[in-house]
Structures are given as structure tokens and as C-alpha cells.
Image (cartoon, rainbow, N blue to C red):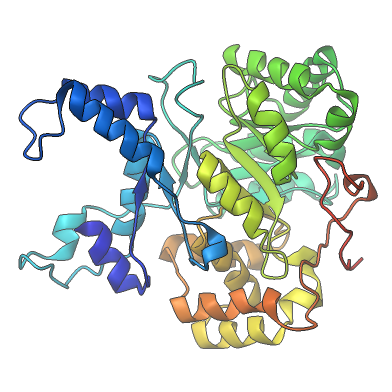
Length: 420
């Protein structure tokens, strides 16, 4: 009932939730069950459950659903339930006459639970890794400004920092993290570290990660992302590099693993190579001009959290000043930047966004404090941007030539219009 009540109140047109535990777990539970009213228990019930699970056809974004959520672990199911608790009004009542808030339970910030597939996770008792909804992106943040920018962001309540060695500012970012210890938030800072494109062998991966942690002044990262797929797939080194990342995970050098800029084809190449951990995150460029529904849909079905980088289009007017973005901002009472962040969050996609000014940081913090949401109508208006005739569908603001190779599994396809 809380799922349906929350969905109806939020205006979700098709309130449906797919709880998809591994078939082996489902079968084991049904087999051990006794006294089920429908007779679905014991060995016969287990066979029925296995058949039903096999026939389950999950919905797809291509069917024009506005939001799909899939839970395959207990932590993910609890997080999904809590997502619906957040939208329940405190005074309305459910069908049984109880206040909905009493049915739903307490509200909390909308962190995202990161999980690996249970079939390959090496430690099911390990605590869940929680990814904050907004991370501070540090690309193109100058060395001189980085310490103060990072410290100010954390003081403002942005407790997640996205880094990479190719941003050439890890040491300065690390100083900002160190300066902000004990700042607002009450918990440690969530730090993303990346394995750069140049790391093409296990020893290079270990060397790069060790150097990044040293520069950042950390002993471990919250998540370690493989920055680009292209060279590794071309060289046949993807499996070896991922295996070394799994080793670093088991050694405590990071708490979870993920990838960045992976297409569906690149993910399909990686997943069979995973041994002890699958990617928990795929960080991709995503905004209303580049919704990437195919990647979001595939990741949803695989239990991979999509995180959006460049959610504001690099500050380009083509996105921030788009008439529909401006109109939604006016209607919702937010800035254009806030609206674009809420669009991704409304699709269940956390973001990594650059914010160097205190005013912008305050605007992001305001969204988190208010647990703001766009209405379904506003979400639909923004969804229409990529479908507009002549609007430059699939416009990328980050489009390196090496990600476009005809026939390559990792390729982003035909190179779309770009803005530089």
C-alpha cells in the first residue's frame, strides 16, 4: 500500500514496482515455506516460482515509462520503499483511515544504495555503500581554487567529491577535504576515484590508484570508477584491468567499483568478465538533450546505478537557456540549473555537477535540504526536449573522438552534434 499510495500522490501514471531477487534465492525461500494459502510452497511451489520468474518481462523506458525502479537485494528494496516514503504527504490518509505518514515511516535524504549482483558479491554481510544524490565535480577546477572550492562545498552540505587523476588537481582537492573535516553533514566525505584511460595493465591500475589516494590524502576511496572503456577493449585488456580493480576492492582500497562513459555494448563486454564484483555505477553524460534511455534501461535491468556527469551541459546556453528549461524553472520556482539537477534526480539518477561559486553551492544544498521534486508535468516538459524536431537530439557536450569507432562494441555510434 505505501508504494501505490505514494505513487498516486506523486502523480505516477503507472504505479508499479519490480522486486527481482535472484531466482536461486526466490526458489530457496519458496521451497522452505510451508502453509502458503495458494499452495506455493515446497518443491512444487519452488518449480512454480522458478517458472514465474523466468516469464517475468521487466518494463522498459522504450515503453515511455517516466521512471523505472528495480530492486534485487534487501538493501535496494528498502531504499526503493524509502523513496516512496519521501513523497507521502503527512496529513492524508490511506484506505484504512491511517495517516499515510504513519504507514510510510520517517523521511531521510535520498542517498542511493550501491550494490553488486548477489551472485558475484564476495561479502553479502558488508554494509551498503550509500551514494549521495549530488557529488561535486572537480574537472576544470583550477589548482589554486580547488582547496577552497572543495572545502566550501562540504561546508555547504555537499558531502561527495568526484575526482580523477586526469583533472590534475587531486592534491589540491585532497587539501580541501582535509580542511573540511568535521564540517556540516555529520559523516565522512564520499570520494570517487577514477582509473585513467592510460592504465592498460594490472600493475598500472594499482600504481595509478595508489598515487591518486596518496595525492588525495586518503587510504581508500568510496568508489573506484574505470574512466573509459575504449583502449582496454581494443587491447583485450578489460578483464585483466577489472580483475585488478576487484583485487583493490578486496584489499580495502575502495568500497565499491564502477565504470564511466560505458555504452550498452561496453557493459555487455564487461559483465561476463566480472568475478567477485560487478559495476555498481555507470557515470555517463546525461541531461534533457542527451537522456541516454538505452543505457539507463540496460543499467536498470542489470542493477547498475546510473550517475549523470555534465548534467548542466557544461554551462552551455543550448541547455541552460532552452525555452522549456526556462519555462519549467519559472513554473517550479527554481533556477534553470536546479531544474536540470531535479530532472535527473526525478529519474532516479544521481548527479556529479561542477559548482565553484558559493551561490551555486547554496542552490544545490537548498534542493537537498528541501528534498525537492519536479511535478510529473514538469518532468514531461523536460523529457520532450530531446524529442523536439530539429532540437539537436542526443547533443553531447563531452564527445572525445576516441569514443567513436564504427563497429566497436564501446562506440557511442554516429558522432552527434557537439558544442564546444
